[in-house]
Amino acid sequence: MSPKKQYIKLINSFKYAIEGFISSFKTERNMKIHILAMILVIALGLYFNLTASEWCIIAITIAVVLSGELFNTAIETIVDM
Image (cartoon, rainbow, N blue to C red; front, top):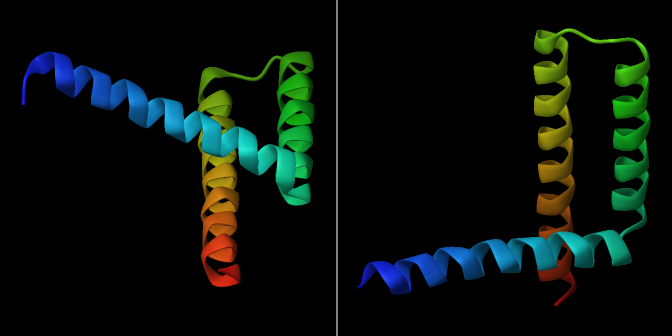
């Protein structure tokens, strides 16, 4: 496969991932709650001037929670079929 085709395939993968995230946000109540909590945590982190290591912990935690919610949504969608 040529490098150009690999690049297009990579771009499409990110496009589909973003579309899935947006779809999950639009249709899942819990995803909206998680995003709201994420915004609140980031705002409070800025207010309290967190250290770099604290921001890393928060970023990892946010990523794990959102990944878990997306995984749960995918399983629910498959089971509902």
